[in-house]
Length: 347
Image 1 (cartoon, rainbow, N blue to C red):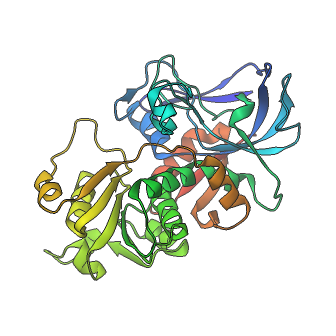
Image 2: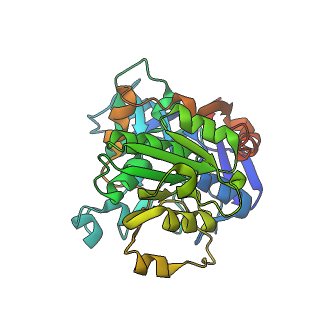
């Protein structure tokens, strides 16, 4: 079977790997669709994501759907032929964070396609893989595509960060960065009852997609008149801002754009070497600056929202590429002038 391996910066190889077999409690999955995430791009381009550095060949991929090809002994939740969404996170359930209900902060979490631990947790950019039954969520609506199902993970990220912001009912929201997670943030904030959603970027194409999924305003911040703040361009300050792009200047814009006593949630991965922060704004305006890392306890909610078509993620999906062309697909995913979520599929 084919498997995608990243050995370091710009060193991606497609190899022929042995077919795995499911052990007791495991499921053998044939890849349906696997999204190329920003972290996958970082691993390919830089050999690292923030402080997570590749130290051995890594199979990326943590947002995927699949079809059950076989089941191991004792598996009861799914059976051969079922279509499934795959939760890439496996918390220990025992550490202080897990006991507090914050499983995404688990001290011993195993997250697919990640170099955060060594040996690395291999991901799902491969034709077949085994998965614990507990991480498989069965999907019964055949009208929803495998590509849509694979969007459950990025929607989970946005649902979690929306929860981190607190009550959004009737609130005005700013989102900086209109890539996949930015668009998922629009969807999540709309689900939570936000009354006004503005989103920013420096590229037209993702902003147009953000409009399709529910943003009220889409602003090219690089084209604002000199001296014009985002809040002024949008017609007023915001109750909550989500920094999704990972750009230090965008975090500064969030701090400047929320009202006194507002909330800023950092979702994007900022540079590993650190940033210059106007921290006095946090102090003098009593801004709550909160982090949001991956997701916890919302994955099945995301699956249900997509498979019931309560939300429509189809505008965010740009296209599918076979695993054999993973490097070409990654290069396509880099081009934000024409691509949003690029997905890999089995041959």
